Length: 156
Image 1 (cartoon, helix red, strand yellow):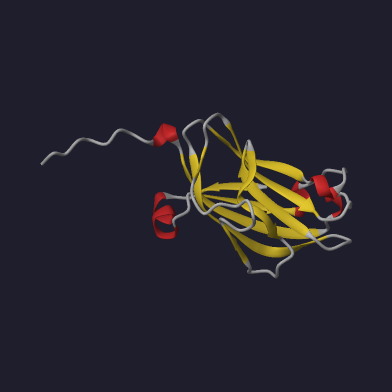
Image 2 (image 1 turned 90 degrees about the vertical axis):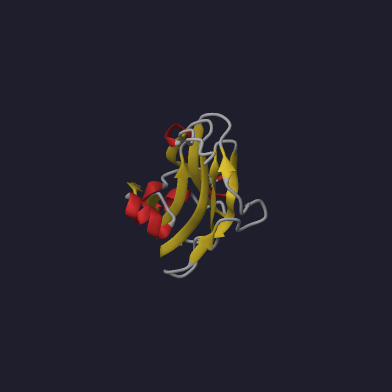
């Protein structure tokens, strides 16, 4: 997995502050695929929030059976941003925040330290490590509490 912090110019133009490039090689679990494997994308502190999430399928995820899904969220709620997004879509396909039954369209705030996570689930008992293809870019905006400052009062 590669992590990218975008420049201020990129963030202003695109609305994203971070991009995480994941591939099937990042998932190595040999347990049954239905339990999936969770990859920690980055640490989050209390007061941070994540929003404006977009998953771009670069290369369709593939394994010996069908059914590869993505849950995206944070510690304590692993599917709050995207729930069961289809990673077997064609290259160039987009999965937006709020997709799936538990996904929400709003920002996800973090009440205690944890992680921004990407969980891959196979709908069969095939090992997650059996995937032999797949790449996706996870674009998002992460607003860190430590970076926010009290605005100056302007009663002008």
